[in-house]
Length: 231
Ligand code: CA
Image (tube, rainbow, N blue to C red):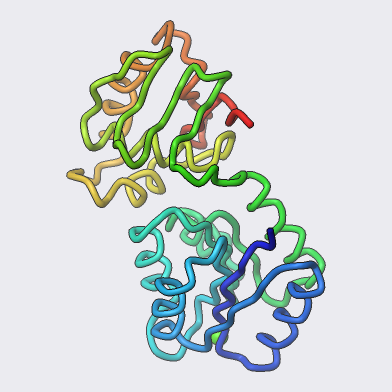
């Protein structure tokens, strides 16, 4: 099945160019020229990935990104004219999966889109995902997690952290990014508070919380899910 990419870019020439490149790479492409159009398209078409320009005419791309990220787990690749390191970090901390600065190579953009989708893996349709040879099972519709076959009692914030990490096993999430991802739940927003929640979460999911393998700390980076999704 072909993956659908929603391309949000107000410059027509660039939009047409990126669109034709993505189509040639086998993607189904929907395009939007404004934030408002993007939001309405994303809710009706449910794309697999969003390529989002931050410089839009109607609303800041940042707020469009936030809207998407709160709405669901659709991965976002940000296109930006801003090339400063600080802007790049800000883009990633918003919760975007990748960030490309203009001008960019179309070939590279396609490769990055493919990499994000590979990393995210295919959804199995029923919303139940298994990790680490069935060691961890996340039942999204049932809003419950099973560790080694037993349901674990998680707080809403712990659930938010676990599902955020599980959306992209192996990907490193900074503390700031995790706050943005779990914002839908009660959370005071302090970066170090994440550490306390992670500590509690580890007590519930790790075989040895002192030597965590499921929720790994990446020094200077943040956290990642250290086990892979079962096929
Ligand atoms: Ca623009």
